[in-house]
Image 1 (cartoon, rainbow, N blue to C red):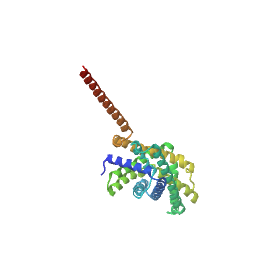
Image 2: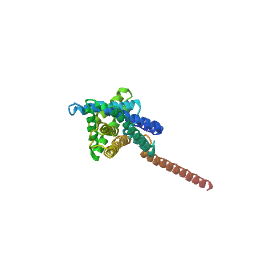
Image 3: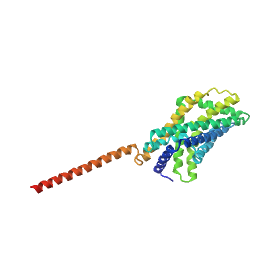
Image 4: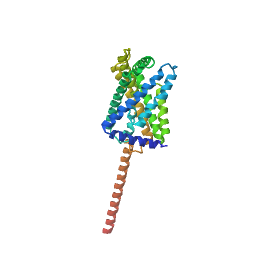
Length: 301
């Protein structure tokens, strides 16, 4: 197992690698990320049909981590996990513009991937499962996501990405595949079982709900393209950023990396130490000069 300090150092290196990756490659990986998560989110909706209330969320929690595991192992980028770039930023290894640009590219790629998988699933008529009852479940799920007020969506997103990024942190502790899978599984199981918000998952639910309403002529009372952004994407992004980027990223950087990786605080400390060293050197020089002068005076006398 890696120590917690080693895990922090691994995240610093991973963050540097992410921002230095060519933009096109980063965009493609982000599209894959949105695609994989959307596909898994679609699978979770199967457990909303004909199951006792309460057990539905449990089985969703069991299934959803599969998407996170695929993204982690097969290659993919998610905006939720990329909020952990704050670790590299506070360690003074990447610049703020590099971090923000990475977030923008990954979000755009996740959005494209969510649209693609939504179109493929809905227009291949997979919601025809269970005599079109699946289509109604898709609509209900999208309506529920858009039915939250801003504060509710924000808090659920903050908690959601706290668990999701905690899963990434736990996965980095393990050195074998079983440890990695277990680390990814437990927090993401809790996130989905508690029906918390994940920006990319919610994008898929609402997009698929909109396309389902168009294709099947079903009423989507709560959903619209405008509500997709101001009722879901904006509060989800803000909540995910705080839950993952600050509650996990910044807090763990402060605890495990603050004085080890050349972060901002340690930089100030080094400057003070260098100033103290230079002052001591100057004092030694002045002392030697005074001694030399006094010796010269004694010779003259």
